[in-house]
Image 1 (cartoon, rainbow, N blue to C red):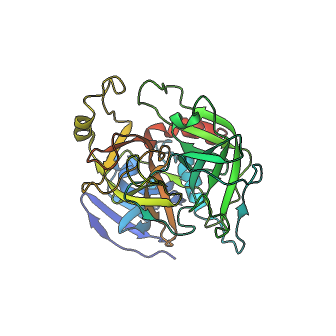
Image 2 (image 1 turned 60 degrees about the vertical axis):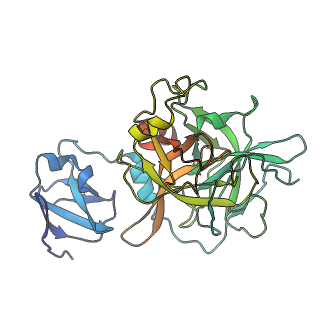
Image 3 (image 1 turned 90 degrees about the horizontal axis):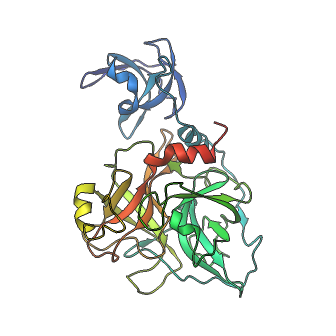
Length: 365
């Protein structure tokens, strides 16, 4: 049953509220009679030509999600957005998922390059998309050197420079771990072998651009409403507040180690200001900080990503109209200078690479 509501916004009159459609759901526009997709108003191209009467699908943080009509194929939902919608409709599971060390010997793990300065400890099962990328050593231990994000049943998103260490490719990805060494108390984590690494074709190790890669897992992850991939941020608008970065933890530059997943809130820094901190590095940044990168920092200088955080997510937390929490990956941790020294860290802007990501992760679409 539809309810009629007039919500007056600048130049927009919204009517016909269904309140039963989620963002990226298919919908029917009463005004145009055409099929459409539920999106934020700013993401609907039809607004440029018609801002009079639109159908509300639902609200997200008081922002109307409207039925954007598909006029002459003008608007098409990205497959990554459709998959996000699917992930957030996964059923609850009464069983824990625990697939650990299915391939590798259990001789203890070793954390050589941990990560987050000034971070707060995460809770069990808080960020089950968080991934650790490891290199198995001759003695059976694993060196966890990079982070990543599970973005589908079969792929982890990370940094291109995490594709090798000392000319050796990583062997294992552990997804969903709050503590890399305490395996007994964590019931929802999974280990995978890596069968392929897709490095962005424009990446060059000599410069700090296009530092993004996809790691293909040896099997599909077991998913449910809790253990699900993160979504990909669908906009180049980087003013979202708040944002978080995370990693398995170095607590200061060249400082003590922690194998516990740490998180911290950061603030976006515009590229013009960020460039001032990297003007002296023309060899690695000949074009400066570009629009395909994002800078973030803690203005107080207390929190920052550090050695070993590479590839981990810069993300924001969102909720569906049904109050289901999910995460959208805005950036991939790429590089920085000294940790928490008042200099922004630099992240790959995920939105700039959606076409490339989708062509590998969901090629049939």
